[in-house]
Image (cartoon, rainbow, N blue to C red; front, side):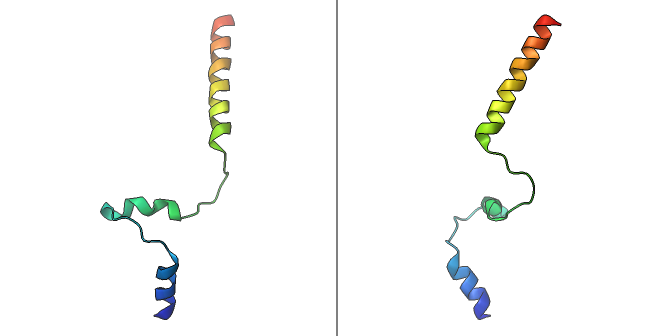
Length: 57
């Protein structure tokens, strides 16, 4: 019982949300982590390559 109480004390209180939808970010997921900047650069590069390929081929 005291362990549960200590866990609750370490966490900051979260704002109330319907069905706890605001608390999803507390869980850490496994997998590849990509910075958002890199993803945007990759997407813009893919768009440019697609435009060039459409224009010349």
